[in-house]
Amino acid sequence: MKMLSRYLDTQKNKLDSMQKRQEQLLKRQDKEKDRFNQLLSHIDSLPASKQMTSTLALQNLSAVRQQVSHLCYEQNQKIAQVEQERKQQQQACLSQARYNIGIRTLLDKQVARENYRQQCIEQKKQDEFVSQLYARRGALKS
Image 1 (cartoon, one colour):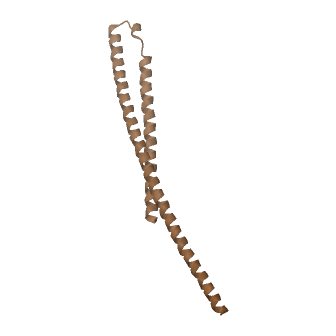
Image 2 (cartoon, rainbow, N blue to C red):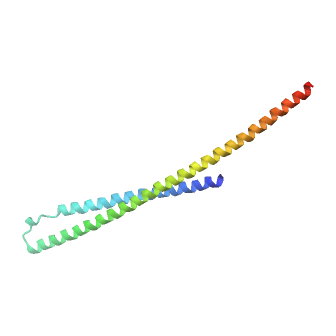
């Protein structure tokens, strides 16, 4: 039982570290979304092409828009990647939690069996003691 209890403690620690990793991924996902939103607001802040009078300025604006749009695409890919990692980590945490519950159930059953065995031993001792008392009383009366 002690070994199983120690093993359960080890598995609980493993689950804790897995949950911390999941929290880190969630924070990372939020940061990536913030970066994406910053890129979008940067695109929105660019001047409209109607305001440009120079051909060179229009070409530069178009190039900047393309670059920022490409950055948005890449940022979206990062968001999707982190989301996938986070979902995988979440599934791993759920599996580990179920595994820990199984170990806990097994440990509880072992404890219950041991308690029952101890109760039976104690009951047997008490029965023997009562039998001996009864036998002594019977011997004294005769």
